[in-house]
Structures are given as C-alpha cells and as structure tokens.
Image (cartoon, rainbow, N blue to C red; front, side, top):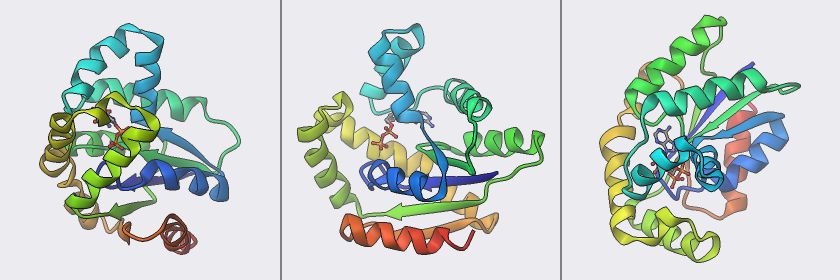
Length: 190
Ligand code: ADP
C-alpha cells in the first residue's frame, strides 16, 4: 500500500488537488477536516467537542483524529493506497502515524508539500469563504489563529519528513492545472 501525505498551510489547495490525485492513482482520500465537518453536521458528541476548537483555529485532540484515520485505513477496499490530507498536523501525530503503519509493516511513501506564502493563504481562504461557507473561514481571527497554529505546530513536520528523506515540495502558487501537473510528475516516481 502507498501512503501519501498531502501537506501544506490552510488554503494551499490541498482539497482541490486531492480529487485529481486520488482518481489518477486509485487512492482513498482521507481528509481529517472533512471527516470532522461531517461529525459536526451530524451533531455527534465528537462533532460538538471538535466544533469549538475548529472555530477557535486550534487543533482537535490527537486521539480523535488518529481514531478516524485508523478506522478509515481498516474500512478501505480495492485501493492502491491512501492520500492523507490535513493529517498529520503536529509531531505527535506524525510519530503515531509511523507507529500505526509499522504495526502492519508499512510506512509513509512520500510527503507532497504544497507551498504558498502567508499573504496568499488569506486571499485564498477569503475567496473560499464566499464559495463554500465554512464557519472556520468566516472570521479573520479564526484564520489568523489557523495560520499561527500551522507555523507553530504543523510546520515543524517539514524537518521531520526531511530527516526521513520523504519530503517533496511543489510550488502551489500557479494555476490549478499547473500545480496538478507538477504533483503528477512527482507522484509518478513512486
Ligand atoms: P484547512 O485546509 O483550512 O487547513 P482542514 O479542513 O484541513 O482545513 O481542517 C479544518 C480544521 O479541522 C483545522 O483547523 C483543525 O481545527 C481541525 N483538524 C483537521 N485535521 C486535524 C488534525 N489532523 N489534527 C487536529 N485537528 C485537525
């Protein structure tokens, strides 16, 4: 099984590119953000707990997202692998992912990192807010907190995966088509 991680700041275009990637390489898309939003929409206890944290631009507890990831791994059938989008988001989650995969003799295949500058993060999120109406895109304060959470907790994963020689960066500032072609030529190598 292949385990790709789609990495990048909020608004980098992960969700947009993920659909083309999963289709071309027969992967199961696992977006922890989307799974959490489904829980919120369903009004579950887990969703209720997650909502306050998501609206504050903070991370939800590691064990919640890790439980979701493990159950997605178990339920997937007839796929060549997985595309993890929004996970891992801090060093503890990356270490736990390595441990989860090691139990079945697997490992992370590659990290595809979509990079855009901070100014573009805000521009893209504002644009998405108008289209998708996500609660965590609506407030300037939430957006700022998410960017701070990214720099403080998620960005250190770049070093983690560079050490593991699994880190591959793609310039996320071009058009959707340009970025997709760059991602495909990278993924063709695995
Ligand atoms: P974005 O693409 O803007 O980064 P996501 O849809 O990936 O947004 O995530 C939305 C929110 O869900 C995050 O700001 C965070 O609160 C929560 N979340 C998503 N994935 C994780 C995770 N792996 N660990 C903790 N919290 C997460």
